[in-house]
Image (cartoon, rainbow, N blue to C red; front, side):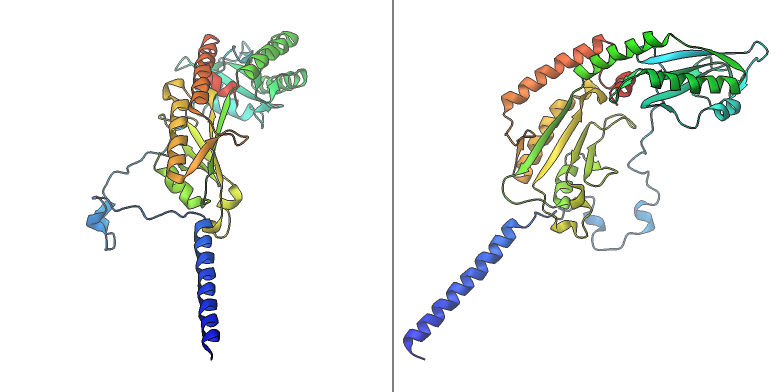
Length: 347
């Protein structure tokens, strides 16, 4: 082989090696970022390198408690149509078992929640019928409005039919408010709710490398987010067990359900705040800003609006100021954000 041929062969090998190295480097750079092992803490070091034994945790008190569902909010004339259901004079009380058996199979009138409450003769409070209790009267209600719109005449008629059937089953007589008045009240409430229903969203977009689901979950977990029921959804729990989450983080559910999620390339995630569902005392918007900033910094992303425009601090300040006005308006209407009535109306 001549010197020229040898030189060309060496040069070709160098070029080929460079191409292979560049391809490998590009592939690594563009691959979705993966979750990394968390550093061991003082608590984990004593048990590292050996199998767990019964004495490690069998007698310890669990570090968590299961969320407790809040009591269903009582009917309120502010957002409900309420019909009284008076017992026949010959009937002194109705058992909880009889009341439960008389309830309709569905608890909705169209798109509006329908409910029945009984006056407990022992506790002297209105409550949903329960086993082993005795009731001296009942009231039935249907919600005036929700995010599906205002109660209409058809839904009101369905409410009347369901209530009448319940009353007939327990030997009682219902008394209904005037339909046209209630439908007009529903429209007014719906107009107010529509004008004051705020749902905020931030998008965090990757600047360079994409993210795997595990990488997103790891970084979100460091801020207190936990896995939601729906794939691709994480939630930041409220300080009170059983209440709606303070914030929701979501990403492509198909990526979360992939056979090999580690290879799923995700380039953006969303943070969502349902303003009316969370008490202002939780400072949800401030915590939303902090979470978005922390995630963007940790994951090399940028916080934007739905149109991909970066959100400046001044813009967020304006949103925060407007939210305070909204909170005040809701409170003046006795529909404070995070209250049982607000959570029912804005649902």
